[in-house]
Length: 295
Image (spheres, rainbow, N blue to C red):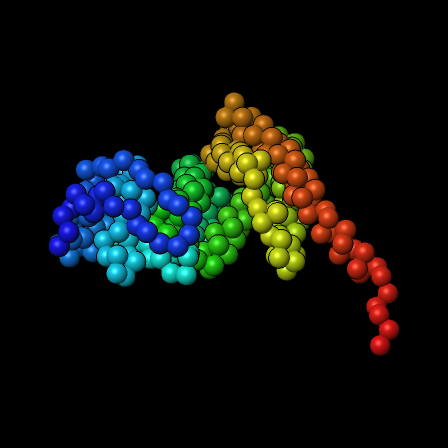
């Protein structure tokens, strides 16, 4: 077998764009040593150490006759074929479905979330806020794991935003009912809830239509939309844990202010998406307004 030092010094040669080298790291050396011994899945090491910031190179050849390379930095198996790189996950099979499972748990959490909102116990608001807070955390975690482990799937891309919209929508419907207890005027909670709900319906329909036109990337999530999502989730947690307090508190006011801020960000991001989709919308409108061709 070829010495490890030679493997470390040799780049993978395959059709396609040139790849930049990264400095060698002890983790990359050890993983290549494991692969050389026949341990082809050093997943636990990567889970503990995070994969490192770089291996011997972004792609280092182990078997030049088959064009196979292991990447210590990104934890993927790369194969050259027809000038394109293909990636496969290096993760235990029982963990590959974890991102989708987290999204599914957010959907299932809606039932105890609604039940605890009206549960007549002093600890119920805190438990309700904890459930929503954990669901918000899994919204970030499932996407991070799917990208990190290279296990993204069309089903996960469908389930993740649906789970977010379901649990956030449930919270936005429930929160205005706490205004009946005299915490604040009902419009202060109902108006931003309506704005956020209508915006989600509009942008979801817009993305679906743009996908039929092959232009979904033009309305992909931007930084304003991400800020809106973060503000919504933090505000809902603050409002949930204080909505049944005997007196209006500063935490409740902070949550209310964040809810109104998120409504403003929702309008802003919605305007950005509509502006990006306007050429396609104008074309679709003109085509629908023009008479059909004669048979």
